[in-house]
Structure formats: C-alpha cells, structure tokens
Amino acid sequence: MQTEFWQKVMQALQETDPQKKCALVNTLYDDVLPTINLTCPDDFPIVAAHENIAGFPAKPHLVAPKDVPKRAFATTEGYAATLHAIAHIEFNAINLGLDAAWRFGRNAQNELEDGMMFVKDWLRVAREESTHFALVNEHLKTLGYQYGDFEAHAGLWEMAQATAHDIWERMALVPRVLEARGLDATPILQEKIAQRKDFNAVRILDVILRDEIGHVYIGNHWYHALSAKCGLDAMQCFTELLHKYRIVIFKGVINTDARIQAGFTQHELDWIYEVEQTLKSYIKK
Image (tube, rainbow, N blue to C red):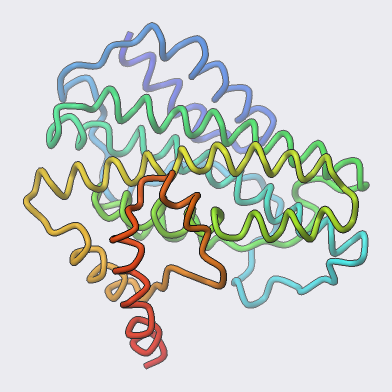
C-alpha cells in the first residue's frame, strides 16, 4: 500500500497539466492519505539530491526575473499579468509541497522519527495550494486570460532545486524566506486591488494569506525542530545561510502580525532586521 501511495505522490508531482495536477493532489490528500500510516524509514523513498521529477506545463514561457515584462497595473492586461504571477506562484507551490513530502519524508523519519507528520504537513500544503491556484486561475479567466498567457520566472523552483540536497536548508529558505515574503506583500496588493473594486480578488487573497500563514508556520516548525535536533543555533545558522545564498528577507513593509502567527518570534524578526543592512552590502559585492 505504501508503494502505491508513493506512486500516487510521484504521479501528482510529475503531472504537467495544471487541472489534472490539482485533481490528483486533491484526491491524494482527501482520499488516499487518511488510509496510510508510515512508521519506519523503509516506508519512505530514497531520493537522490539531483533527482527532479516535478512536472510543469509548456506554458508559461519562463524567463529570468529581470526579463519578465513590466505591465501597467492600471490596464486590464497589466492587472491580469499581476494575477497571472500569483497563479504561477501557487502552481509552483503545489510542486514544492509534493516535492518536500516525496524528497524529505525519509529524512524527517530518520532525523526526527516524525516522517508521517512531515508528509502530512507538506501534502496539506500542496492541497491548499491547488485550491489557491484554481481560485486565481478561474478569476483570471473572467478577465479573458488564463494561466500560461504571460511570461513568468522560475525563481521559487530554482531555490527548491538549490536546496534539494538538504531538508534543513529547504525548510530554512523556501517557506521561511520566499513564501514568507507573500505575508508582507499580500495586504499591500489587496489595497491596490480594492481600488479597482475587484472585491472577489481581494477575498481570494484573504484565503491565500490565511493559508500561507499556516504554510510558513509548517516551515518554521520543521526548521526549528531540525535545528534543535542537530544542536544548532537556529538564528545564527539562518544568517549564515542567507549569506551563503546571497538572499535578503524583507522587501518593503514587514507584516509583523502575520509573521508572528506563522511562527517567527519578535526576537527573531528583530534579529533578522538587524542583519539586513549587512546582508544587502554583502550581496552588492
């Protein structure tokens, strides 16, 4: 049964059609996962660091972040491009959840004896991200567009690939950095969207923000659990990782309330804020 379960996880991860991927993820989490109980390392697959089976559709065409065309938010096309960018993040996040469960379940079982909960957490993330993607893409269609109609970049997935060798680094940098940025950016975007009186989109972003707090919380939980198990200073090591990958955390306004709900402490946020200027100077070199 476990082998069949992992085949279904891999099938969902490999699927390239967004609608089919969402359907597979929903069935996997809602119907299959409740019947599974993984209790020992042999219940989890062995995945090589270089192994990447995530499926992506032929469109959108991916370009470097700096090459994504800038479109005026005030125009219908520019507004649709903004919603498309959100849909793209959500689609990538489906793969991130599936990949984390498939790739690192054995690590979580070996290192924390809690691989089943780790898999449940990340399949829950994938399930909620599939809902987000469907909501945004259906709303995008009301503007005459759909996912794949605009260019996008692969920054989020590139970080997933860069951390594919290490569960601790993945937990540190994908949910706690890249996904957590959405906690800061979403309320500001909602204000801009409200000015267009697109209140359906505002409500969709309410759902996304609520769930993303939970997703970042999951990343925080596992990062700190792994740090404690290895006897690491979580904050000092996090700073070293930011230097290693040349990343800064905050880009503009900080949504302190959401970040605290997502598992950051005020002390941790103050620490990160203090090192930001040093990091920015380091990255510019």
